[in-house]
Length: 100
Image (spheres, one colour):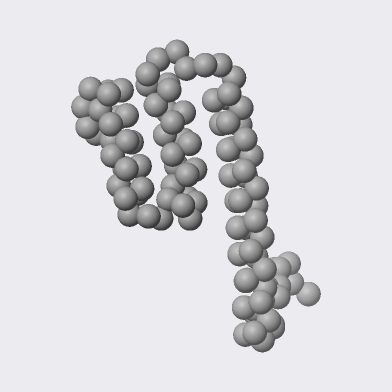
């Protein structure tokens, strides 16, 4: 008898090891997606809590909404992609006084 733990993955075939790894990866992805949804909900609650007090705060809210739109099929049009990028650059310039 030994005090060392047995690594079960070493005793299974390659296909079983790959299936286990895929299940682990999927579980990680699902956990990360859930955490992301929770952070997005917290951010949206914060953004909805009060009206913007400055142009910079309004630009942050608009930036978030544009980012959501940019992830949709409607935003795949190259003209819309350019417009989104230009508006985000405009927000940065107008909020900070310079391009970052």
